[in-house]
Length: 431
Image (cartoon, rainbow, N blue to C red; front, top):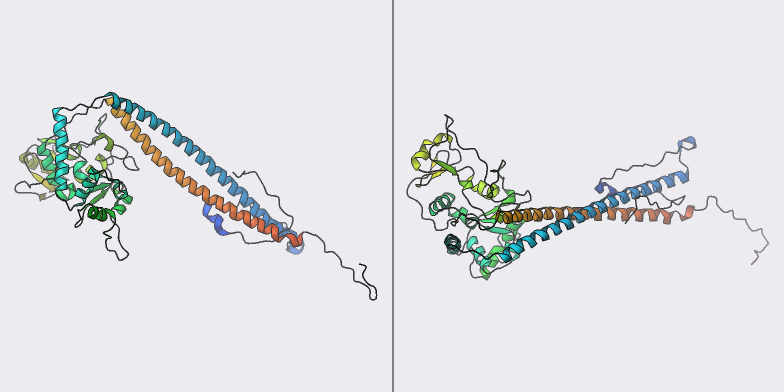
């Protein structure tokens, strides 16, 4: 620890050298300059010209010492706050652990069909065996914890559920197979880990997802889509109050007469059921899947009971619409006609019932928020440690420079030269 008030004694006469530019990095403005003690005929005496630069270095060291103290205080505060978060997270984990250990899992008919639906979706994904989604599901099934897939949240088709098979078919067909098989990463670092390139720009098929696919006997073929949550432009607006699914508070469409169109059911983005763990704090900004992934995929896609009612609502359809009887409008002026497309990869069906008590769901939400805050705190700590390291390095540079001044000052320690008396001729020097 360097004390801000501690000063190194100054030798009365040292040589002047250039102050290194390393100080510019920490943004430190010199608070003192060489004192201008005027001398006769407008010139400095030798002592003044030597002492003032050493004084400047000493002041620089004092300023750096204050910087070190400031960063050390910041680190102390951040680490204390991080330790508090650790304790709170542990408390929440204990509460959840007590609940899960004392509650026997309930398996009901709706729950069984829900589990079968999820398994069916994963099974259909794996039929596309040379796809990135199938390789990922295979790795997850065998609990492969390869670093290449740690940042992958899942496949689009497995990250949302809907209430009935017809809606599942309809929304899955609207997105198309390519989107349904897209991988979803939280950060861009996760995307970079999936595919690596050689210096000539060609894909290195011995690493990343290509290497993993080859290792399990499922070589990856062709292109595949990956969606990065942190690079998406999220929904900006309010959420439905007191809604455990965090649905978006979107204004209902209005016809020119101000009325809501007949047959309007809702927005597709709000018809997706999302697991509680993916509703909050997935990105650095604290966003969940609904306002990032599914808002990007569906935007304000409207759902109507019938094709006829959907056509009547055309004046207020801007981001597309679908109807339960198979009607589909992809966008302004783009209509999808003909029979339904056979699509095997669809959203699973949910029973729509959560068996977790409301208080338990709230605890899980709070714990997720605490973990998110802890991650941000760790980023602040790492940043502060880097700044402290650099300022300490700058202090050491100044210290060595100051010691150099002292070492070079020795020829000037005596204020007056020692006279040498010449020896008279013919007289020997006494020994």
